[in-house]
Amino acid sequence: MKISPDLRVDATPFRLQGPHQAGPTPAFEPSQQTDQVRLGAPLAQPLAVEPEPEGPLPSDAGTAPLRPAPVVSTNLCAGLDVPSAMALLGPEVEAAPPASPDLAPADAQAIGAVRQGLEQHPILARVVESFILDKDHPMNLVAYLKDVQSRPVVLEHLDRMASLCPVGPSALGNLVEQTFNPQVPLLTDSGAELGTQDGVSGPQRLRQDLIDRDPELFAMGQPGSEEEWGRLKAHASILRTEVLPGLTRELEALVAELPTSGGFPAVNARAKSAAGMADKVDRMQRGNDGKSPRPDYCLADMPDAVGGRITVRDPRQLQQVMDRLEERFGKENVFEKDNFYANPKKRLRPYRCITYTVVHQGVPCEVQLTTLNASLAADLWHNTGYKPLHPDLTEDEIGYLGDLQCSVSADEHRILGTEAN
Image: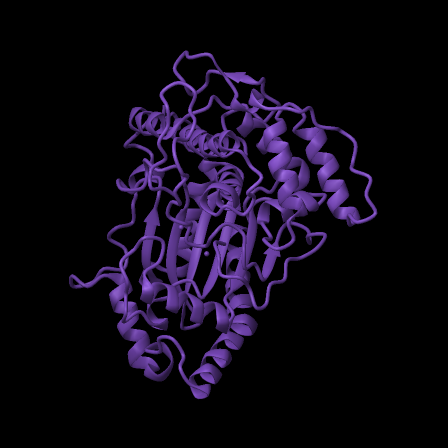
């Protein structure tokens, strides 16, 4: 448990211009490298990725229960009657499950449900179906759809997301500013002060503490000998067999008393393999995602060798989980917090989450808090616009998915901005 260079759009049609550039990938990148996925009930087919590919790991959106919304919505655009971009392309989707001997029953059931549940949104239905068929890049979105408990909730959220008024990046920024409410902690508590002591930032303090404790391990950069590889593999084994289960239990206990619906809140967790850690060190040392090279990057700089995610139904519950996490781990064990809703540099971007670097069982772990809508939108964008893993998509379709993510973020800020009124 990284979006952005800001997308450029035309004023009216909300379409991307030029090449689609990658944005900052979510810290616990959406859904990949998942060793454990915990819902209210076990998933039909738990994800297992070892060694895992290096890649990204997020309700009721108002005061009323979720319900199917019309294709045209004005809830975000201040009176503008803009038809959903979903209607741009055909053809009509079929409601019946696909008949194919090559499809596993869980896949066929999920695809049939998607075609029926998203019948009014053919672009989204086609993209989600392609995700289900893509076995090389597992997503939490797909795992949720294949689970009979969470499937109805996810389809309900996808349907509502697709019915929001399309919002591009520039309009998102305007709406975020218009809906800012200083009485809402989620919009104001950036957590910038957490972890800093005597002018030294939390990540710097944590780095030095880890190196002082075990320099042979945590000062290691790219392993260059059999001895270093052996040390790294032993560390990866401890992360997978001891730290990961412990962190998962902590996160499950954290949400145990919260109301549940359709398997949410959900807890996801994963640990990197030795190859995954070595690959990240290499990428960071060479320069990653347009960032400057960090030749001294080592294991002590890696907060997400173990990552966890809590996904909740709506942004109001997100505030509860944020408060509970800081109380449960203790602020002395929180070395960094980044609240994308409140961070002035990130709240105008479409991706939304709250990330923490905590120490659990003596090891840094990254915990991401997100809403189901933000998680689904991030998954949709990550494997299409951020990484072109589905080259058959048209520029209009990718532009639509970018607008969808902006629309979800704008809607959440609208909800939060009216919370105290």
